[in-house]
Image 1 (spheres, rainbow, N blue to C red):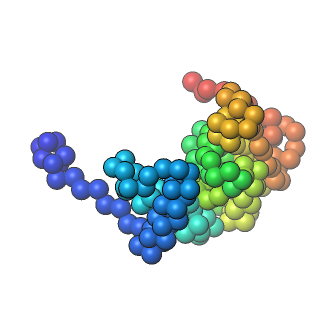
Image 2: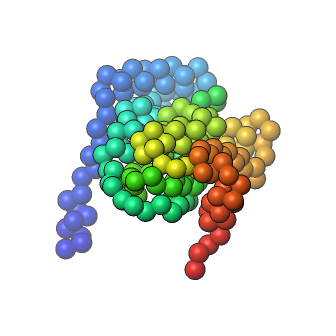
Length: 204
């Protein structure tokens, strides 16, 4: 049964044909400018592959994070901190077009409304899958949650490694960049410390 499923598996990918063609043409020119033979076997389909990869890596432009959150709001009296931590982040540095990746930790304190938990990682992706800087990404996630839920406070911390620092430039392979952004109750020292403690510790 499993073998039959594997045999009948068909990968389905949908891309904008016009954009794929335009990007492929440009990447062909870039590869040739670097001194490579675009017609050799290993590179024949590379421009198209890059074109499709870039569309996937930046598909956040086609998503509306605010609408994602608004699609799953629920009335609830819960007034304690809600934390979603260790959300994988993959983004593209807008300065060098190299990846940065790591984890986001997001919390909010409800004010009559909660959001479906899966929507928080979804908006992280919606903002991350664009040309970004980590500082802006952190603020965008915070601002979106604040606008959609009007909670008592929002906290966002992102820890990421940047390939523009590790592969080129300063070449510091073990460096990690941490950014944070807070609103409302999280601007108070006690609440912020509780949040940091929750995302730092492994709960048994």
